[in-house]
Image 1 (tube, one colour):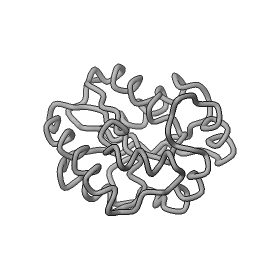
Image 2: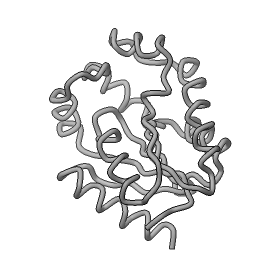
Image 3: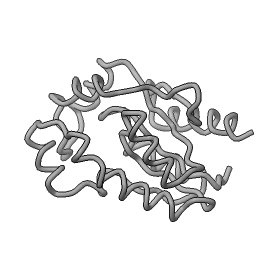
Length: 169
């Protein structure tokens, strides 16, 4: 299932964006971009120190992701971005109007456990509360789907592909 759309894999830290994103891109036959790589060194330093980002920190990051998505508009692609707030998704949609959102969602205990098991990532579990507090789930008027993150990455990807197929048909 090759898609001409850019799929933004969104959700709080620890839901599997970095794991599912490349699997989804491979399944869809499109390139993948890791949203964390668009962060400035200043943002990474803040998060590493356990300091939540403010909107002013996020705008340049979102604009960089939006620029990538814009270049892939009509060609397809998958990019990860927490995209926690409607305003963030609106900014991404302004750059890439055809973008679809895949919200990876799951029980907090599962997400926290997965976060605590990851190695070499700068996002501490201490920031999970701020992520959930900021999360605004997809609105009924937003083009996207929500997929549960229980199960293996392959199972999550399979559910995501099926949900995206339904959305695109």
